[in-house]
Length: 193
Image (cartoon, rainbow, N blue to C red; front, top):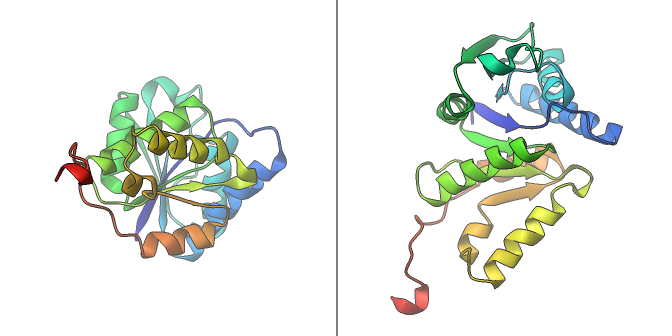
């Protein structure tokens, strides 16, 4: 794994634990020689994860849409900053460059980015691991919701585990190294075949 895309908030969150967790993830990526691919901002958890990588001498590629370049205050000390035209182009470029994806705590934008990339994996558009760094149990409601989707038969059980979840960056990345994607999504249930 050479590059990991990280989706996360441009806010700090309610507790310092979120910034500390983002920075720890950044340091862990750098220590493992993994390049960070992220949204390009210098603020919030985005800035924290990038700074964690840079402080350890690692590589960071930021991808930011023109409309957010000033608003999110693009990071001025990255290895490379790519300015794109739209949010869609940002996600596509992150997907193209990354070997795996991690969501840190964030708001609706972070959730949307993670769910889209998870859906792409489910449909077989990529076979890269998708992880939730569950800092302070932030993603517990989403994990529970995935289980609810299974119970209500809107998500096949084999796809639930495509969302790799852990509270430790090291353990999450170790799980990425052993990740094996399930077969491509089918609309035929096992009992129908």
